[in-house]
Image (cartoon, rainbow, N blue to C red; front, side, top):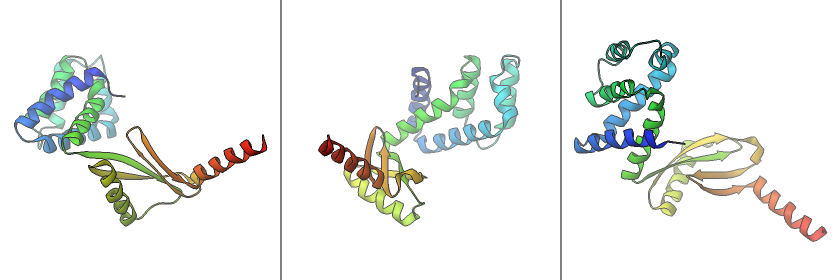
Length: 180
């Protein structure tokens, strides 16, 4: 869950990015920075360590993210360092992503199946579900053999359950009511 602190930072950088018409570019940079930090344990630890000075942390940011990153993203990290909020970075990226998706009318979701779906099947589902939500839908396929077959789609707090397991559970419930 994204907290209020992360939302405030995300809103601030999102507004700046919108003013410059660079929301997509800034999001791409934020994702790349988050990925670099999460994949590099030493960098992750250094940015969060109370034993590394703020100036040293900023120097690390300048050295690691010297090329290909806007001043917006580098300055965001430096502000987080100054305010002792580097632990909020991943949540800020998530919040920024949610704002960008809202702006671009995109909904992200998960389609859960017993076996992997082809890209074509995922695209078909995205098109059908996009019509229902009146926005573009991006789905990621997750595998869960316990559903036996069919599909379970989760977008936000909504579920579309077309799984064999759900049908069997419903049948079981009906039978137990008849037998009782």
